[in-house]
Amino acid sequence: MNLFRRPFRFCSYNITLFLIGLNILVFLIQQIFRGQYIDIYLGLSVLGIREGFFWQFVSYMFAHGSISHIVFNMLALFIFGSALERHVGSWEFLTYYMITGILAGAFSLLIYWFTGSYRVLLIGASGALFAVELAYATFFPNATIFIWGILPLKAPVMVLVFTGIELFNTVTGSRDGVAHLTHLAGFAFGWIYFIIRFGFNPAKSLFRRRR
Image 1 (tube, one colour):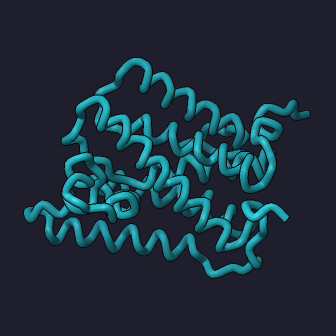
Image 2 (image 1 turned 135 degrees about the vertical axis):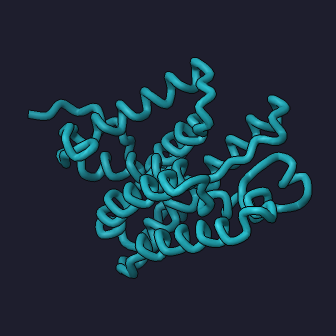
């Protein structure tokens, strides 16, 4: 059996809730030490990596810039992550979440490095969450998501619309303070993970005709 496709033993440890709790804990630490440059140590930046702060490749995923930032991210993690974890098992879910999040951050860092954006500070779980939403739409293509609790969209449509918006904002150079490129990177690395790990192209699920 291909080493990359060797399945984990299926188990359920509610890793999603653990991740949510860890995100909240880190956010509280940020608030407690707000005036002591805590974000410089937790967020991912070229300057930080140059100083040897290699933990930033992981810590940036658990730091957030505001209450609304963490609330919306954790809500998405709870909705999509819980279902995904129940479907693939806790270890597969955790591996997917961490790998896509780390790679999304690393890719963004390379862009910042080559464009001279050394002081850009990347924080938030959104890169990994875009990968989680892709996986959810791939495994549950007939699920309906109510955007803002009102607008019903099939999960694949939701993911493709969100990705299109992120692509538009990236191409147009939006300066709204949102890491659109990291979101796209999370989506892309999630796609690659599916091909390498599961031997399945998400396009077969996302773009299939539904009755």
